[in-house]
Image (cartoon, rainbow, N blue to C red; front, side, top):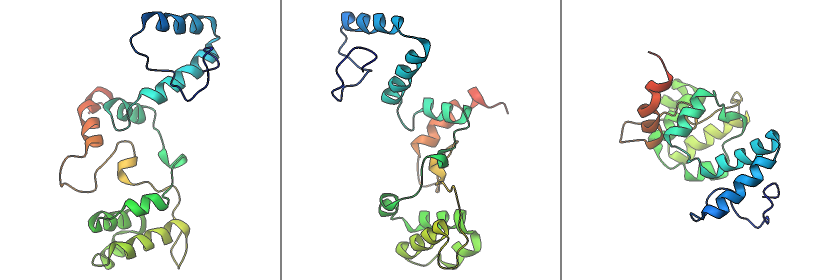
Length: 166
């Protein structure tokens, strides 16, 4: 906001209300900036306007080979939201292997989540697993089940042919 000469009051760089004069004012400020500063502003505009799970984000993530494990790790909020036994067991298979998952398939979600946490931390005799991501946070995004549409994966499926030669 400072680069554009605007007050830094939790406002957004992108947006506006269709005011052509305001937009022209922003353009005038951008033209006067160095390329590096324009790129800094552009990064903020992109962060403000790109929708997570959209076809554009999936295309960018795949094209740029984004590794979300560099900036994400499972936390308490993640485990609190994980309540599906089938998905927890499939995650357990991803992180601990199919034999571990098969041996705990009838366990409660709480138990399976504890085992996943043990692998991530390398505790209770479990070999530590680094840089694990749920399938839906990878590029390309994948679903754990075939229960219905998974919007993020569906978005990638729509644009995949534009970026991947078969």
